[in-house]
Image 1 (cartoon, one colour):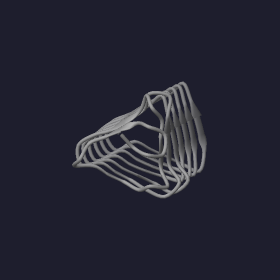
Image 2 (cartoon, helix red, strand yellow; image 1 turned 90 degrees about the vertical axis):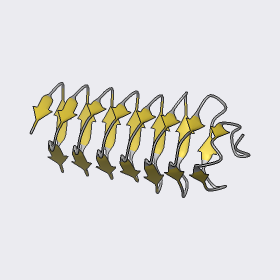
Image 3 (cartoon, helix red, strand yellow; image 1 turned 30 degrees about the vertical axis):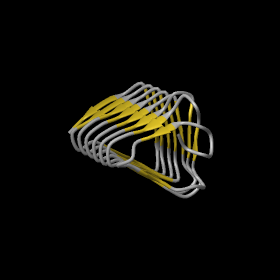
Image 4 (cartoon, one colour; image 1 turned 180 degrees about the vertical axis):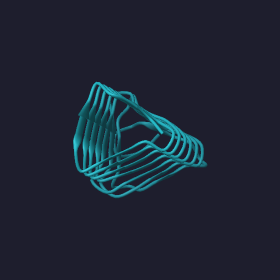
Length: 128
């Protein structure tokens, strides 16, 4: 149990004391969560995922080798090697090596090497 929020943290995971892991959230596998990240509303971070900066993961699942920094991810799923930086991702799924940088992605699916950089995307399916 993480002392800042009461969430579950696997012995194999690394979670800094400054991170909030709410009682209904969990960090599993070899995941690394640092800085002032907040995991809330039943979020789960798995595998070798890395979450850092002033990120908030809410009601979401982050799997594989996904990386999130200084972003808000809400009701979304990140798989594979997806990377989110300085962005907002809402009600979306990112698979493969999808990249979202300084952007807003809402109600969308990004597959493969699809990228959204410095723009907003809503209701899109991007494959690359």
